[in-house]
Amino acid sequence: MKTRYLGRTGVRVSELCLGTMTFGWRADEAESSKILDAFREEGGNFIDTADVYSQGRSEEIIGKWLDDNNREDFVVATKVRFPHSDGANSVGLTRKHILFSVEQSLRRLCTDYIDLLQIHSWDPATPIEETLRVLNRLVEDGKVLYIGASNLRAWQLQMAIDISRRNGWNEFVSLQPQYNLLCRATEFELLPVCRHNGLGVIVWSPLRGGLLGGGYRRGMKVPPEERRLGVSYREGRRDVWDRYNTDRSWDVVEAVEAIANRTGRTCSQVALNWVMNRDGVTAPIIGVSSEKQLRENVGAAGWKLDREAMEELNRISMPEVSYPYDAPAEQQQWRGREDWNEMRQ
Ligand SMILES: NC(=O)c1ccc[n+]([C@@H]2O[C@H](COP(=O)([O-])OP(=O)(O)OC[C@H]3O[C@@H](n4cnc5c(N)ncnc54)[C@H](OP(=O)(O)O)[C@@H]3O)[C@@H](O)[C@H]2O)c1
Image (cartoon, rainbow, N blue to C red; front, top):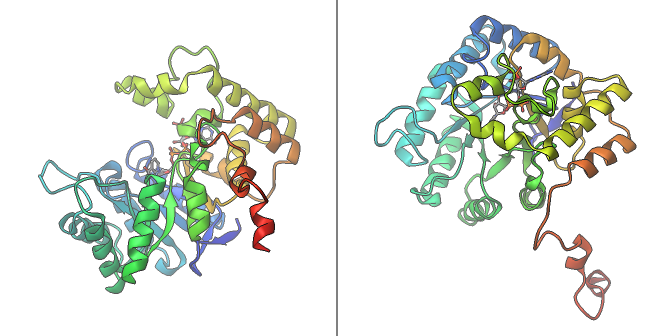
């Protein structure tokens, strides 16, 4: 695996980030450790978790594993925002909850510092200035090296960056949005904001929760029992399957499969390679349930889909666009009487 810079920082991260939402849930501790070993062997150094994954178990498993490894060799990202318990203040991006949660994460991860602390999503109840001030403080204290955001709207992200900049505080260096062949609205505003501000982009659910990884077919009434989407379906999350089970999804799934057959790759390798080749993406975060899947998905690196395959996937996965995104990009460069770029010369 190659490494890339994380946004404008000088930190190098592997071109695939290991997601660990499955640790302590779809993968027990023994399997999770095997996944981490395999990821390290394959040259991976970038690990993403969150305080809430499996109620902290994911961080604990990583912490135990890090204890047997060289901490400095790994870039560990975690998140804060969602509730830990029913406590009235055990949630959100308040000074109180962030400071508490970071202490817990440091303890579970068996480490003195978090490489990248990300806010898991927006908190409508806490003034963003309070959040950004405490994040800045954590960086100054050395408990956190960099800060990032996840699941923000583009205006929220730009506003937060501007507030930090105005105050001379440390700014977000990365965004963690969903992005895959079945979720491309990320391209409308979020990716341009990241490009404009030099943010790294690490994307979640690059296989749309497994749907793009093969094994799912048009016409399936319910998802297979042994797969993650099947488990959540049986746990009552039927809305997820209903949202995924559309003709548009199956058109994309079938195109991925056809390209996989034509190129001798697997479906997951094709879908991940598409994400890795998109402008502005630093690394997809790969979620796996087993070491076998990890080894397969690492095979998404080290080669490139050809132009024909990229174009075909771009076309078939093209999202429906409406105003103001339906106007061609060049139109924004046209002022009315003369070309804006020419006038600037
Ligand atoms: N910031 C956020 O809000 C947010 C949200 C979600 C995730 N994340 C992060 O992003 C990471 C990845 O998200 P995700 O797990 O949803 O990613 P994903 O890549 O879309 O889905 C991963 C799932 O796909 C299936 N899969 C993986 N490799 C496969 C292969 N080679 N063949 C067939 N199926 C395969 C596995 O499920 P089955 O085998 O069970 O089908 C696996 O659990 C998470 O671990 C977490 O770190 C962040």
